[in-house]
Image (tube, rainbow, N blue to C red; front, top):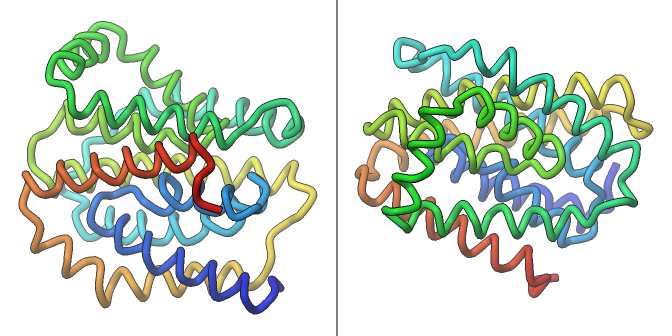
Length: 245
């Protein structure tokens, strides 16, 4: 069991980013990861803390709007394999890369990409012409950094226009992401699953029902895009520069 102050900190992070994930479809991994890494947690421990909660919220988002889900077989054939291989490599060789810097660089790139209409059009062309490669790269990025959610947001925002459709399809693919990561951890992690991670996940789910879901319904499409871009840029700068903790 974590120390009491660490427990309070983890709960605070779960509450805050459960709300974010409830609104945007991503949050616990995309923003929770750099926070916990900056605080001093290892990548492996960070995943054990965040994955169960992310899976629960994504599952609820999917089943509540399942009619909006457009399943993509590319996720299973191209994203999941690269995700699992890259995650296994990082966990077994965690001293070879600076995950924090990778996280920051990817977030900054995604934020700039969302702000630039020219770059967005260019990325849309790439997505349309090289969709399989995009799915493969997205899986690799998620495996080594947990930042696949940012690339996923760009993909879904390019494919769909409405907030609810974007959010539900992000949640669906994110559910596959997180489940795949959890499977890898169960096979190769030295730390193993801890019972208190279940309590963390239940706290996140409770916040989703009591707060996040209500806020999500009250945010317009324009505010939706502006808020997620601002969050991505802020976290990218903080993670890449190590200015927080």
